[in-house]
Image (cartoon, rainbow, N blue to C red; front, side, top):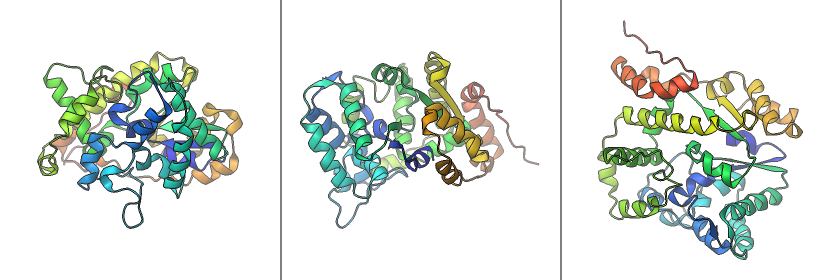
Length: 331
């Protein structure tokens, strides 16, 4: 929702799902060449290949497969999954142009290479600033703070019970939950940067091993309790909130999804003021206020016992975010 709103702004570039699409490679290494970053952005991860080659797509996947498409499902570049199709109707041509500039760059810090990509896109589309938004990137806050000193962070969240239900249906999150449960059972903290997808130095090797013999049928049969999704969300909120609390107050904006839906003008005015008062634009605000859609909470459709068990799994995160963890009663 937020990416789609930002995309309509005349002066802001919406970079959607960039870091998440790179999975375990997102922050690996401190220095690399432009050619190295090109390969990273052009090479589908083992988990992505396993999902897409078996038709296990997610809602965020925007690349149009089929006749005329350059890439088959198992070879779609990560940057082509969501980031470039979110910006252009011809993402292949955009990637050709960007990669030509990127591949000629000498060795530099990873932060500088990422800045180059973001600035190149910003200039290409005639924008004045960029915003990167990736789902479940809360655990990236420390490394993003180091890479982009002074950057501001917008934390968009909603009721953990609804978030857990959404995660439970989402192939990417189902894989993350499975991996986190495996680490927990072996006594490792899956939310520590050393073990977390994207920042872990050993996770790329684990990812290759795990998906070397991936079976789509076995994956589909795997039972993942809804409470595991609640546990995963709650712990991610607990760890990520700690990271955000360590930043100065003027560098963090918290936005509750339900309030954006209920009062989009008020909340998006807060958002654009936080990003920069120079980006205030009444026409844009009028336009995007019609995008949020009200919907009833998904957790209310669960059986009462399931509501209670999910509420218990989400309790820590709910308390941190200030939600009342109520449960409907069957009469």
